[in-house]
Image (tube, rainbow over all chains, first blue to last red; front, side, top):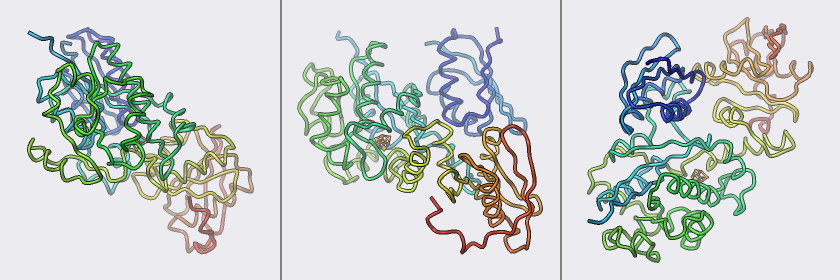
Length: 76
Length: 347
Ligand code: SF4
């Protein structure tokens, strides 16, 4: 299932990371989440947050100001 | 076999909390990190805004620390609750508007609630006696333990040997002998320990972990409270205090003027909420107007805006004024000479 989305546009780091964390807490291992953001810092911070917490970044896309990060929730 | 113990480390992103967590990890304790976001933190975005700073590698230091340690990091938004700490600190402020002691009490208290909820055993911080004038004194460390309610469950691995044994030490969860007795303002023992662990490239914040220790920032915050007649702020207010040149020509309004392209772009994000103006006859900065500005005020603001545009030496500059309701109008103004702007208008 892949309907999980988070709109973190216009938020400044670390808010996109915090909102991602809150959203991931509600999901199950194996679920995917798509995060939309606009602070370029999120390109570093969300993957770093995923690495330390055991989640997998599936892809990062950047189109102009808009950044889309797709991740898969890891095991607890 | 004894139960593996679990500790949560307060991770600020600086060297001390990195070392404190490592010292405990080395004793076989399961450590996870917790990092609090107050809105005043000196973090990546502040550097990211200013274009000239983009050459520097930009990272979230707390996440970087967690990666070095190989621990999980929980970043917690305390923006709303923290307002009361900044506005009404029971123990007062430090040199600027930094309520360090109340801040520490609050964060440790949050950590205590966190360990209760998650079934962790104790809390660790990177505090060192005498390292900071307000919150890290021999007489204030016990205040933090007591008022946070963490009491004996708060362990400071870097200076534990100079303090009474805490429960993790007494119960043998950690070996007190392998903790440290750092004291005073010197950074040498921390740097030596960092080298022993092989840590490099760590962050060394000079004044403190947040903007409230910055004199100019605190001055701008005090001005905001004075102008509004009450001590109150929203997240947007305190973010905007980090950006641009702030000029208050009259008590009822101030101007936030972008200093370069990165700041102008950042300020653009606030266009829908604030009256703003921009020179149209010449290149120039985006200017937000914070407060209640009447036609006469906008005229004055337009002259100042013209002064910061490339038309500063022209006879007349066209300024377009946009209000939050979507309306706009143009003004033709003579730029105010730089020398005519009183020094005390600059915040
Ligand atoms: S510098 Fe800021 S974040 Fe650090 S203890 Fe003081 S008030 Fe809290």
